Length: 449
Ligand SMILES: NC(=O)c1ccc[n+]([C@@H]2O[C@H](COP(=O)([O-])OP(=O)(O)OC[C@H]3O[C@@H](n4cnc5c(N)ncnc54)[C@H](O)[C@@H]3O)[C@@H](O)[C@H]2O)c1
Image (cartoon, rainbow, N blue to C red; front, side):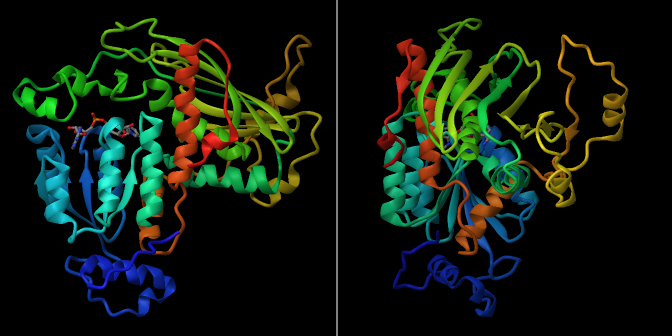
């Protein structure tokens, strides 16, 4: 996918857009774009939302060549905005600062190519749509929106404007996940007939987020941007009008992998959840959720369990795909992930030779050979390693790089608006199912705009 819209005037941005369409021809174009250091591939951006995740994205972007920050917009002027703007300047990115995104777009739209959005979920639709309508490409954090109708409007705006809209499900660009999908699942079909999926994000109990008393946002400013208090502003993800709660915040990353790896969207979901631990006045969304989806895949039905806990961190976070030939466990956490062969499955030597998987570690083989099999328990099978890692790269870097390369017309987006929308449909329905206390069906048309 690349930008189809052309402009008569050859300002810097339209020049980049038109050269993006040339793809490989770009190297032949004289480098008249460069105002800052770097080559003709320079992309100028603004950061809209400079909080915890905005800063994570900024750090990853600083490692990607030829991206220049030009503006930072954040309503927390005395804290996040100031901190990020100063930091960027220290790294040589001169930038203008804004509280209101409308003023930012007004003043900057002709100087920038794209906006990276990391504001709270309930702002995503308004921000992303305005940016695309201003002629800018958008990288927008997940969840696309906490409101499906608004997520739909984002897809429609993307189609109308022809701008790129990447949604921040960063595992879609993670080389380890891509390897598992391309090589293990598609090429080798190493798991055989997948019947069950199991995943979790278990996180320990946490105190509500605080704020420095010197940096309180005036009540009228908070109110203008949809927050009732500093406490609510800091802990927006727990409030029904502002976020989607843990199942959306954490679960959507992993449930996104369920549909990607299974090549299907679910036909139903049942779920149990509640605010069992925290005060429901400050934690409106459920602190604990357990959900079971039913997927109809090409090979048959798959039952997929997912749980999110916010009171206990045991075993952390991962996704496990279980088939009649083997099991794949994968996680964004670099320390975790392996493939396990069912005893009855054919040997995997050819996949080892092809470099799809690595041999299990020697100690495990020895342990297996010397082990006395306890008839009451199945022996843990040897773990074949996944031979691809992020090699110390920040988790979000490949997804951002994919976005910037798509802006240059050199790659397709790994998580375009339609894919982000499918995932939003899947996860937002879990909250509905908890409330409804019954199984909810998905209509096939629900996943499409
Ligand atoms: N992909 C991931 O791994 C990942 C991880 C964490 C968060 N996120 C997503 O990133 C987004 C931000 O989350 P966070 O944890 O950084 O939240 P945060 O509260 O730390 O930061 C949000 C920032 O947005 C600013 N803001 C709020 N409303 C604004 C507005 N109308 N205009 C301009 N600025 C505004 C706030 O002042 C704050 O600095 C959310 O959508 C979240 O779901 C993604």
